[in-house]
Length: 405
Ligand SMILES: *Cc1c(COP(=O)(O)O)cnc(C)c1O
Image (tube, rainbow, N blue to C red; front, side, top):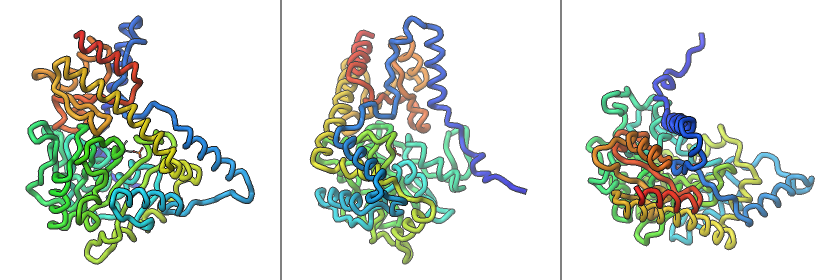
């Protein structure tokens, strides 16, 4: 008799975004005359189109696929050399020496941050930040590493939680119990905070000392504006011996619908005699048939001089929205974080209002939709996330309303 993987039955329903949609829908029904007025600052997806250089590369690759002489079938499992080389060159510019053979091209950082846990022991102890991108916890629940869920605390008893709250500047503190695997995300979704060099070095040193592995999600690396924030964990000495890094073309070049990312597993990262690079290569080659040629050519174009200029303009556009929202909220008297090295603005709800109470207030009084912080973990309670991924017009309009209120 077939039996299901019971770990899947333990998963908590992610009602966050469906609950938000339901509440917005109810509001629209109750106030049809205002339906068009609703401003959505809850979205975690880009809205600007792909840039001309990327479009040109996509068209060119499509044409190649239609020609007998230039047609390509299966891509190499680990990625085309031209893209791995382009990524490697970008790392060199940052002073990090990452070989093409240490780069694994994929369909995005969600898959890779979700799948990477497969190469670690089933009884590994995992540490995550709270609040957090839900993929890290859920994939470890699926793998049976999370233990039992406690309704009272909103936590899994097998996972180490590192609260990131205003009291610690949203910087995770070293845990009491030693984890085997540590998930870090900087610049962070949802708090919008980024780790500086000193803060990140604390983690690299800790991982080296305890022989833990850091899984470093750098999906928002392109949003870094401050000097002292590392774009890559490999800017920290020793990181190649203890860290895997995830990157994506989604939030910088607008590839959320195109699908392309890459993961760096340095050759020096060896656990009890086993190189994680070979394990991940084996896993990738067995379960993945390579990112499409067309997408990889588009990814290569992102690294061209023109592509970089265009990507920077995209990021600057969203950062401009972030600035407007951040400043507007401050002027309106809110306690605001993030927004400087990140497209996310993280605010403290006023008084003792819960995240969901603030959601209702924002929707009903200002017709603005955001995301309750408690949806990202128990320590996100009394916080709220707004994103800069909308239009400039809506950012300005939202701020105007908030200031009036
Ligand atoms: C958006 C996002 C990703 C990237 O996902 P893709 O699969 O590359 O689109 C990864 N990590 C975090 C924290 C994100 O917010």
